[in-house]
Image (cartoon, rainbow, N blue to C red; front, side, top):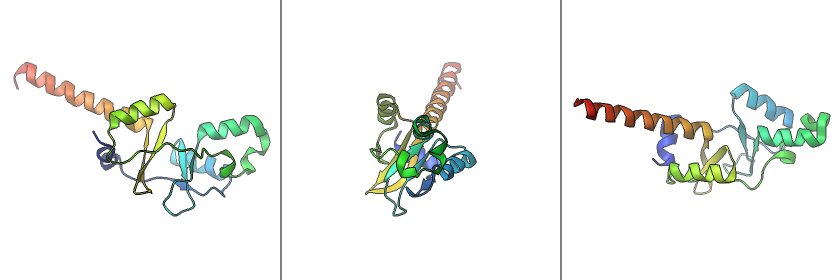
Length: 143
């Protein structure tokens, strides 16, 4: 399965935040949307970074009470691992495991076109296993 197939199923909506917004704003958006990361961009469709719950917790550990007033740019990861729509889902699973990352922006021609989370990958894999199971049962039972 290709990343483009996964995006066709789940949608290509990506929550984006400016690097100039506060950590408080990022926390509010993560909570409201029930997501674990926001792509950081100046609004031009490029990926400038990513900020996850993990990034915020790390800043909280060093800055304590002052964390919420800090800027997203202070906590975001700037070395962002991305993938392309034509990439295979299996290779993305390996990449996510190797790098211990849970969110990967999808980029095409330098522009943000989607995001894949580890939850999306697991759901897709479970769905595929269920389809395979049903096909095997039908084959064995002669239907």
